[in-house]
Image (tube, rainbow, N blue to C red; front, side, top):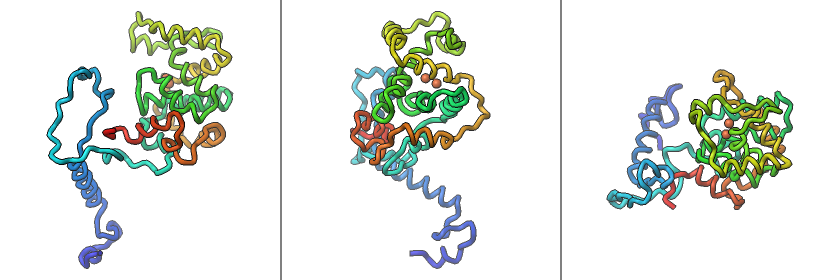
Length: 264
Ligand SMILES: [Fe+2]
Ligand SMILES: [Fe+2]
């Protein structure tokens, strides 16, 4: 029920409850603090492993009758009930400029739509999930929804970045020397993965991803996701139930990205 006072105070800046934008923001903040006060939110081991020794027991805070979070994290924007790939870009992934500019470059270079899609998706693990072995995680996330060539390119781009291929003008990145030091050597499992990719029929698909994987991208060039609506529509099999609810082999991974702090 609206109070007479609220009605009296209506003006263009007031909504139906007579609240200004600032008041609404304050009310939302207050509601969030209250909700967080009722919940215990625990981080998964992988968030803290290294900062603490995962073998040590966790000091359990007295929870004073609070409930453990088992759904949406109130600190994050809510996702639609049937989330699409673009919803994950909008609500859960970090700035996607690098992937978008890589996809645009791939298109400019005349690669196939499969390679453009691979470029658009290749670093979703670093931007929204787990960094280490990001090529493998990203490939696994999208595998049920894309052609095998696309997930192959995504999986092996991580490895191929470490190995030059002069035939396509791909050099070892200067940025890797800066980041990892001049003496860095990939682990033996990466050397084996490189050999596997090198002799695979889709080697060039993964290699083309590395060629278009822009590391020094233009911070001012704004590329919108919508530029790739057509490619995604044709080559990403968006599940009707929404990503996370379609019982694919990676559905649980999408759910974890959506609800990263659920207790179980
Ligand atoms: Fe990458
Ligand atoms: Fe990349």
